[in-house]
Length: 288
Ligand code: AMP
Image (cartoon, rainbow, N blue to C red; front, side):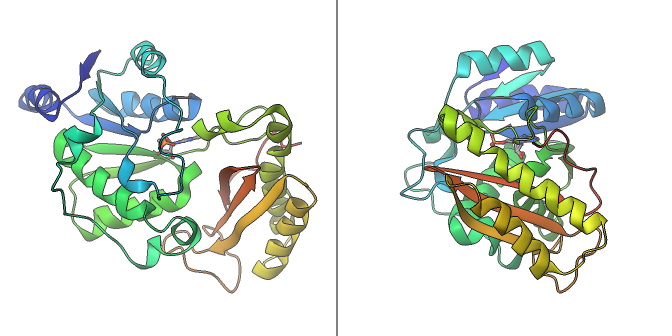
């Protein structure tokens, strides 16, 4: 596996592959990899001649009070996992490689990025759109793989790609969960054992919402109330948001239909976790 630390190193290799007519899949990550990230790589390896993963904890998408400095990192383990998976190149730039001191150009969005996580984390999607634009311009992927676990991020990026005519396909991959239903996340490593147990309430509340929707409930307020009741029953959980929105526009809906997104953000202690499902998805398994 090629380890590229600079844009020049990455591009040199990319242009060789392009000259051979090979297709390229890109899996952007912030590292501290788990099976969720690796599932994106698996999908890319299946669809493309070459797969590139990036590992970059993007300072631009963290607010001043967020966890940029304590975000977990383990580059040695990450590169080993990617190599074992069969990834062809990992791009691991330092922040200075990506952002010149006088950097002043941003990719921003309205509507899709404004609610849900955009409300609680106002700078995040500007940072995500800007860094992904840069990564796309460096790697020139034919396809880019992103997790449905970050459903709003996926919707934002799909909209950006459509609106700005990026020449690539964005592929949403299913959420990979722990055995008890908790969505895998690098931030789960912040949880102490008691919090880890409490964190099961996220997937449990969503599973109950799935069941009630399957049973015919289509009123968003009722489903939101049900989720909030389950979450509030867990003393360590503090609700950031519970929302039901259109799956593409991320705008609230009056009635629940297939394709709508039920999304939650919950603080367990000081750790903010998110989870979601799309109406019509298979039931969340093993939620306890
Ligand atoms: P991150 O490193 O958290 O920025 O995530 C990098 C990519 O992996 C994003 O597209 C995420 O949506 C995706 N991802 C993270 N966790 C999961 C998961 N549990 N299942 C599927 N994809 C995931």
